[in-house]
Amino acid sequence: MSRSRGERVPAVQRITSRNARFQQWQALLGNRNKRTRAGEFLVLGVRPISLAVERGWPVRTLLYDGERELSTWARELLRSVRTEQIAMAPELLMELGEKSEAPPEIVAVVEMPADDLARISVPDDFLGVLFDRPTSPGNIGSILRSADALGAHGLIVAGHAADVYDPKSVRSSTGSLFSLPAVRVPSPGEVMEWVDARRAAGTPIVLVGTDEHGDCEVFDFDFTQPTLLLIGNETSGLSNSWRGLCDSTVSIPMAGAASSLNAANAATAILYEALRQRIGRRATTTP
Image 1 (cartoon, rainbow, N blue to C red):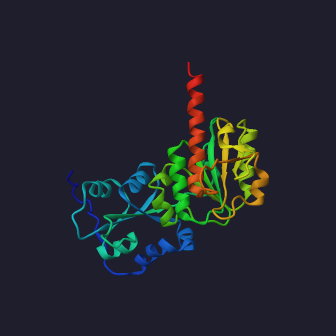
Image 2: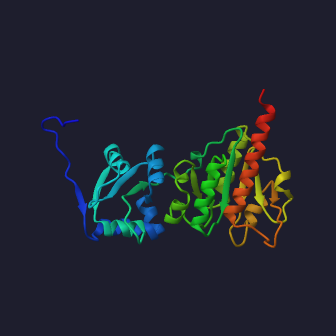
Image 3: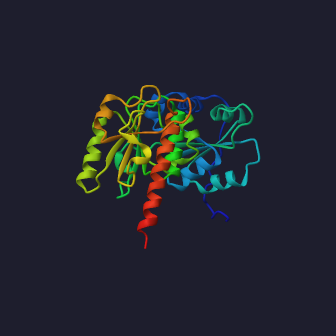
């Protein structure tokens, strides 16, 4: 479409040196405090960037390789997303992409949403996951991916923990960060106020913790009821505070020499069982 007479064509912005703006974006990769203060984080990859745009996450800046012919996807993204766009030297994009082989086509600078539990919907069949003080951002992303795939409504990351918006978490979620709400909370108090309010509104959420000496095995617990699944810290498990708030605890039967599963694997196994039970219940109640 041609531009009308007098309409200004915006000048292409370029960054070819490690100037102040580049250093600000570079700091988002490894400095949680700077990510939080800026309220933004970096996103790479076709699927994650596409999902961020599709789900309405505000994109503050699109950084693209100014020295290569871009793919159809990249050209369409730059055409359709109304935001600041900057052509960047490929060696600088490579640093932001943390890759050693080739620079990414595009890096998106995306705005963080508020850490508000109201972002998590609570329908009658609510299924949520709370991760207590995780130390691995990769595990956060992996649990997000499983929770998204297996029908959960949201993830809560509680306490002094790895960051949801750490590049490793964003990358390992493979885009699920943008389709499933993930909310950071400092302590159990905020979560229990939220849970109690939902209970008072008519959704009787039960808190179910994971423990190798659980009250029952995972297969014997009724996951068809509204459930918040609590996953403990990778090393020490659930804190005493969260353990005391559990309505029940479940264990995963072990057949081999291993005494426990990785936190993300344990969450995935239990979420799968919850989905299996819910599918089975729908099959028996559907006329």
